[in-house]
Image 1 (tube, rainbow over the protein chains, first blue to last red):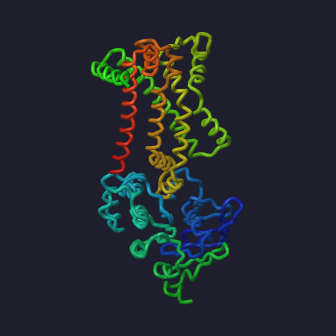
Image 2 (cartoon, rainbow over the protein chains, first blue to last red):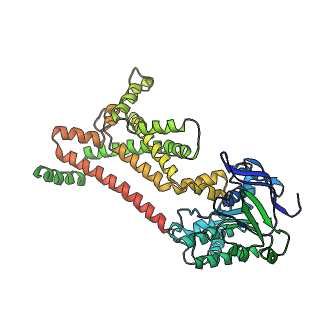
Image 3 (cartoon, one colour):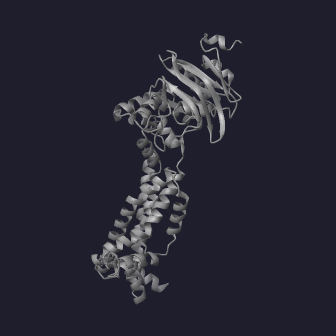
Amino acid sequence: MSENALFELRNARLGYENTTVLEARDFTFSKSGVYALLGPNGSGKTTLLRALAGLHRPSRGHILLDGLKIYRGIRGPAAVETRRRMTLVAQSPVIFDASLLYNVAYGLRIRGVGAATAAERARAAIDKVGLAGLEHRNALHLSGGEAQRAAIARAIVLKTGIVLLDEPTGNVDVENTAIIESIIRDVSERAGVTIIFSTHSRRQAQRLANHAVHFARGRLKLESPDRPAGYLWDS
Amino acid sequence: MGLLSESISSAIALIANCEPEVMSAVGTSLIVSVNSTLLAALAGVPAGFYFGTHNFRGKSILTASLHTLTAMPTVVVGLIAYSAFTARGPLGGMSMLYTRTAMVFGLFLLIIPLMTSLSLAATQSIHTGIRDTALTLGATPFQAAMAVFREGRFAYLTAVATCFGRSIGEVGVAMMLGGNIKGVTRTMTTALALETEKGEFPVAVALGMILLVIALCVNALLHFLKARSERI
């Protein structure tokens, strides 16, 4: 295991029932940095993100986080601790039928953070994603772009070291795309944070990421992982 | 029309004067239906939640059986409970026949399939992503289950209200297990049937009006809770 390795896919096969979506014989995501997962629909980007989040079990092989298997089922303190190191924002985020403030504070409250502190931190995160003033609105009544930003606020408020984003701008307009990209940039500047996001847009990957992972015919290919960011896009 | 309008004005007077016979039937109805609904909610909602969130062998047979049992005629439920409580039945030694306890038990048997079935449907209607979302935000399996449960809270409340309505409006089980004993096991519905048969329309109309008001109050409470929750 490399010192700098965060996620390691070892002979991993991901799929559903008898269908293989993605195979990775030996693939590593390093600590820190922003990874863009690029590939067409159905290439396995979402499946990989779910597997990294511990929600999808490889049908063969292993995915390791800091050298330890990620998928050990959802039960047990170790599994919970692993999940609490990261957050995953889905492409179509699922919003709880409750206020925006409740939604954003949820992850803090289940970690045992007090109500007042959780509310204060949630308000700051809501402000950061540009939704200040909507704290008490039922989050189900937010627009698509607002809901996406709410889901991102719900993730960034936790200040986890790993942030997984599944097509964070896939369903939003240009204005919301700019806001979301600005938030991702902001989060990526925090020390020690690793962001892995999927996108169809090579331009967006160029704007945000310093590593690009291509999904081609069910396999992963990393573009120059150890080179400076600018180099990746020149070839 | 004259008979109905006369009955309504007499009924209003009966209600305003808190006529003991009417109030006794109202009290008995509320006691047996609230208790049977509470018991059914305590058993049926968690059961429906479990069936809705877990996959196991025989689940489809169980679901089909539940749906079938919701349509079981009340007199059949009454007959089953009666055969248990009668002197020669397995629970005959407890001397519970023609008591409120027997009525609560019978009504519980009547509404438990409906409560479980509605709770199962409510759980299945909740977005499957709720649990995964809670897990990705760091929830333990129990916290994730609670997130799903919270999401379905109004559907579960609606299930409880529906079952309460079925319980309080029921005649067959109340008659067979309660025996319609005045002041003891006479409910609004059994009294209403009896008074109508006797031609005592004002009492019957008064009981009918109270039943409607109770149904209205339960629905108004549900709407109030939902509206208040949406404002939070």
